[in-house]
Image 1: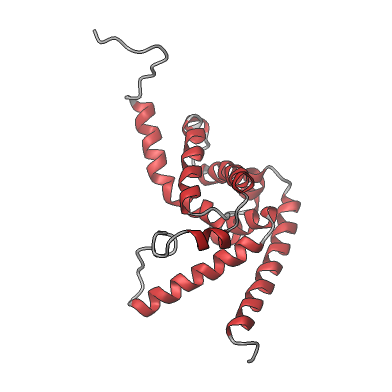
Image 2: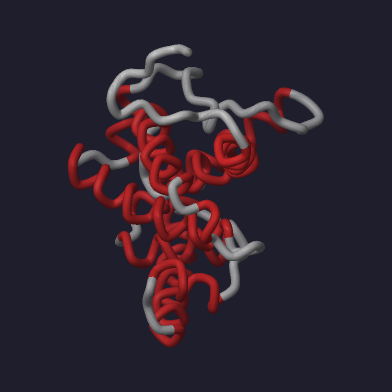
Length: 193
């Protein structure tokens, strides 16, 4: 019989397999959401590990079909803590990270060619810039509703806030987004029609 170190936990078996399947199924969603909530690539990778360390301990208790709701609640808190801890924003991170190193900036695209891929990358940078300018509470609701297409009820559960607060924040976030997009559009056209 093989001797085990004190505190050793067996990782084989159905629980480990369920946890692995859960992580693989939701890894893209978690990473994408962390990036949209203002974390750079390296910080998002670290935060994703934290999210899954929390989630896999509770995977058996997550209601089927509500995995993204649960994960967004966890990753929202992890992202908020990471932003405070590192005191960075997306624009600052973008200046520090080498171009082309970020899979969020240069994803494998289904675009027809290099021009379309370039337009997609630019649109992603504009989205990141706008999201970075939003207050945390507005960004969380906006990302969940507009980008992840979650219901108001699911957002309320994930963020542990009343549905009326979700609606109010979403209205304010949409207005912020529209104003920021118009401002960026004016910058790009030099302020002329």
